[in-house]
Amino acid sequence: MSGSGRTPPRTVRQGGRLKAYRPIGEVERRAAFAAAVAAYERGDAFLAHELLEPAWMGTADEAERDLYQGLIKLAAAEVHAVRGNATGVGKNLRGALQRLERADRGGFHGGLDLPALCGAIAARLAGLEAGDEWASRPLAKPILPGR
Image 1: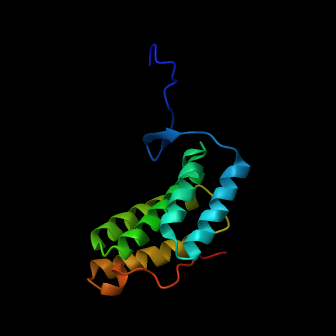
Image 2 (image 1 turned 180 degrees about the vertical axis):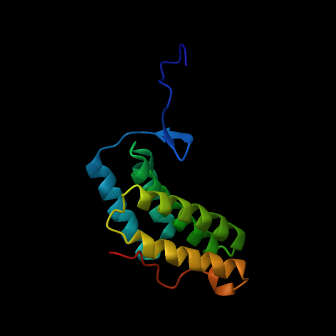
Image 3 (image 1 turned 60 degrees about the vertical axis):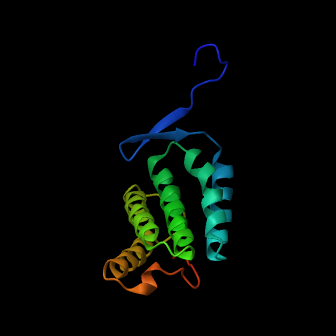
């Protein structure tokens, strides 16, 4: 932006699209990831989502970004489940599944069992599509496999 003294935001390509990139160090990203996983497993999906945002935007590694964004979408699905929004649950679960599968193919798993997590997400999506009420409700105890 000419004359404003601000530099334009940096971007990286993720999933074929340009996305925001605000670099932060690996130590900070790993700490945010660990805190987010703990928050998610305590049942605080909203906090998990918020903690993962800087980690997601803080790396240029596409597989790492996919892992973080997939977990952000998974957390958002839980927030929608609490609100009773089955459409939001489905949309975010589909996005989570797509990104977590890409992270797995890219070899970045953060210590999680991504095939097991993707299987659980796919089962929940199948339940949603079949009209099973349980699939749109919040999980009683969210667990991320492999931890």
